[in-house]
Image 1 (cartoon, one colour):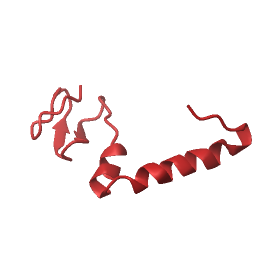
Image 2: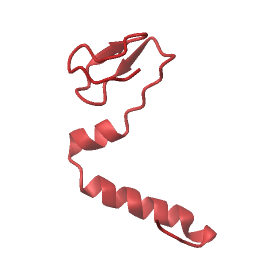
Image 3: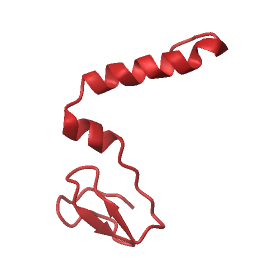
Length: 67
């Protein structure tokens, strides 16, 4: 847990994101920012970056469960 003053929240969030980004490679940063929208016609798998069609519970390329 991290406690900061209300005025310092944006700076704290920025510092935490910068630290996390410095510990990930490009694929890790891309994966961690991937959002799955279950209502969209297609999504990008955060595991392998393959295409997942709407209504499919697992990525057809890597098998990651997304739904």
